[in-house]
Amino acid sequence: MEPMIRVQREDFSLAAEYERLSGDPACGAIVTFVGKVRDMNQGEQVAGLSLEHYPGMTEKALAAIVDEAKTRWPLQGCTLIHRVGDLLLRDQIVLVAVSSAHREAAFAACHFIMDYLKTRAPFWKRELSTDGRRYWVEAKESDNEAAARWHE
Image 1: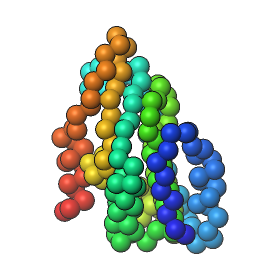
Image 2: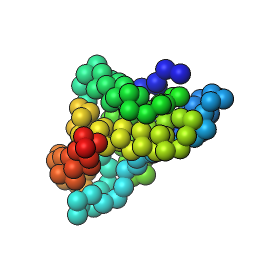
Image 3: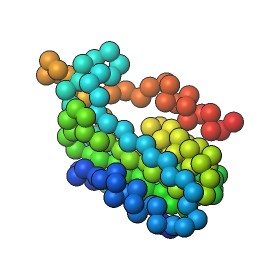
């Protein structure tokens, strides 16, 4: 199954994406990760956020991450959806769903894709604090460290 990669403003259905991946009879495992807007980040109370990206460049970067995961693990399918635009608390931001014959490959690939997504995809996040301030979110060293472990 060809990977499904989308960058979009609208929400996504976890159930629909799971159903799409589960149709392959060789699939023994599906691992999903959904990232959501939370109320606290780096000590700041958050009311919402806005995500920006470079159309075209972003999709290519996401495809490269998925392609690398496919070279490392035997995957039956992969879905990567990332939202952009203005989001509110509890809104879904990102979905990574990976199917494989075995759980180890599915878990590892899902984790790898998220780690690389945080450090290699051209997204810019601006948060809105509960007191009305808007500020750009800087990259975290912990994200770089998480991605670096896949080089070992």
